[in-house]
Image 1: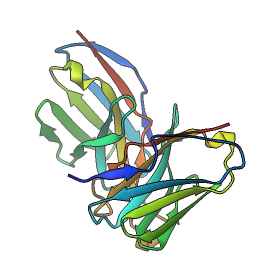
Image 2: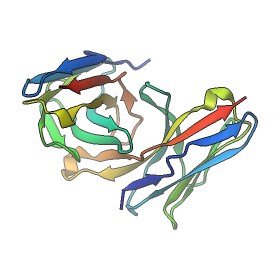
Image 3: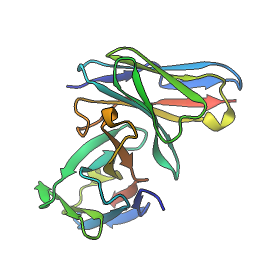
Image 4: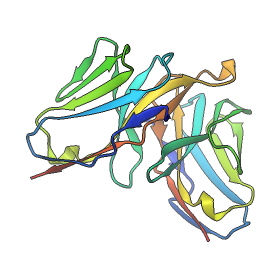
Length: 112
Length: 115
């Protein structure tokens, strides 16, 4: 079974803090993704990576950066957290570019 | 216009009912289509892919209409355990050709099956 894990299920941070969200997959997938999910807006792609050290902006990259130093790990960084970044963050990975995406359990981030 | 549009529902149906969801997509170049299921406070999981000729998986039937750019999901003999949000998913190309495809998710349709 594919397993995608995320470093935290719940996180509370203060405005201006730097926040790291980590995602690890154990199936040697090339592609990894970061989404945020908000009521009424669905899942929106923040960034994705199709190989180590390769990344591409998604639909809403502003205020975020990512890091993929190893194939199994994809990190999302909020350089200076703001209240409008309060959301559910979901990481996913996939083997092929049109293949099934496997999601982690999500991180609920609250920025105060 | 959203790239993938779904009726958010909720659809409230009794056990045993047949229920259908539709989804429309805006990019005529899309080639891959999926339905994902998301339980409350859980991550999305693939329910089924949608093929051009239509496909069935047990009580679930998916149809694709390329000319009208819509996808449907039919659930027969609804079970309580079918209660979830169903996400329509369509691929699109990334800006970098090396990046290949990305997926665009609809907002989801919520289904509640009652005893």
